[in-house]
Amino acid sequence: MKSRFLHGAALSALLLTSTAYAETPGNTLVVAKAIDDIISLDPASNYEHSGTETINNVYEQLMQFEPEDVTKLVGGAVESWTVSGDGKTFELKLRPGQVFHSGNPMTSDDVVFSLQRMVKLNKTPAIVVAQFGWKPDNIEKLVVARDPMTVELAVTAELAPSLVLNVLANNIFSVVDKRLVLEHETDNDLGAGWLRNNSAGSGPYVLKSWRPNETLVMDANPNFRLGAPKIKRILIRHVPEPASQRLLLEHGDVDIARSLTPDLMQGVAGNPDIAIEESVEASIQYLGLNQKFEPFKKPEVVKALKYLVDYQGMADSFVKGQWAVHQSFWPKGFDASMDKIPYKLDVEKAKELLAKGGYPDGFTVKLNVRNYSPYLDMAQSVQNTMRLANIKVEINATDLKQMVTAYRGRQHEITHSAWIPDYRDPQSHAFAFIQNPNNADDSPDKTVAWRNAWEAPQDVRELADAAVKERDTEKRMQMYVDLQERLQDDSPYIFMFQGMTRIASRKNVQNISIDPANGVLYYRLTSK
Image (cartoon, rainbow, N blue to C red; front, side, top):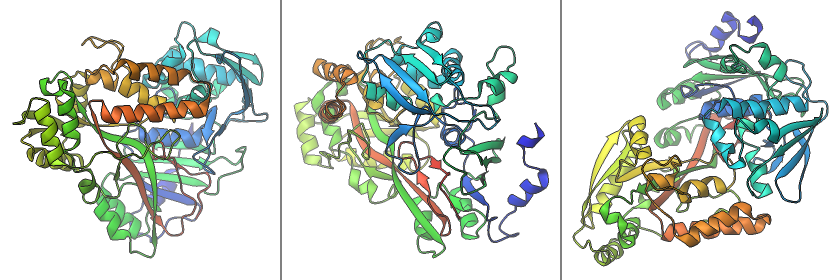
């Protein structure tokens, strides 16, 4: 529809370069960011960072984290909820008076449609609800409308209610406008073709246009239930080069630069017109050691390698401001986080362990890594420090697709990888790093543990299984702390860093809210 796109003259004015004007329009927030990762803006299909950010600003999820306090889980489209005695049935009461951008009222039918649609489409994000026991052939029985404002959903597995509620904040639980979506259905696709480029939400912003590798525009929703956003328009410009982002920011042509490298960030730090916002994020950097590789079958050898990484040296130099030392599978800043740092570069300790493991003279091993900085720099640092204990590291630098393909096929010896939670609950990472029910090469359960051919000790698996079911939330969180301590000592993972989000903005930009789980921004409270 014509009204969904910026008029050509207006868009052109906003895209002028720094030679044309020295500040952005007062009612528009202009953001420089790489947005070439967007594949679809459909909540049932999106699995990429830029799409997640858009969806979080355009839709409301059943549960969510508001910009007023991004650490606190609250009801989104849902006003209240009750849980059955067995913890398997959830009754959700919708907030009265909610209206979609189209003007259609939100009812339980929209919620049921949204959830059933997500499961039936069965795109990549649907993996998040596999643990609920939801499948295309049973979802109509497990998610139902009891009345116009009440939804009942059931899970077939025994899960902690707190875990289920945390999962309901994932953006696949965005409520879509059923009537509007079905008006654009083609060949029984449940509106998937149309929602790829359009929106049907009720959130603080309305998607106006997305031009791949060019721009994404969102306009304020004046009827949002918590009040209209302070900024009327969000214009995100595709600017993949950090140096270009810096120039645009310094000249006032953009209000926010999203991905300045540490050296560029240091370069703007002294500019009185620029402010820097910083937040932890949930990305964990680690080395995965394939247990099929003969030396790694010896636990002493695996532990020796954990003493052959210069964690702090890297954190103080080329990854400064991007990554902070962190040595457990769940990031700090969240429930069940643990800050214990048991490993540091200790060559003598490593040599002692290598001798106990039967490799006093070391060995040669291949390290798969992405072929660009800072990942290649990390690999070279690891290569240099492991050489001190006679371990020869051969770096295999490839593009991300090749590296991930090899990792998913267990065709590696060491892989440098990252893991980001699908939802803000430690079970997200515990499942990935511990569960491996079928260690065969043709297993359908390709978790991180499976990729590294690791079968966790029986007591670790039992503790992980118990944590999923524990109804006492405080006790459950302690279980995940205990699991992290076990995996620090006894697992084929060398946990190294936690990601940091650093954003540079013009000084007049206020109230930037950063989601610590994934580094996306909430724009509702932002002002200029």
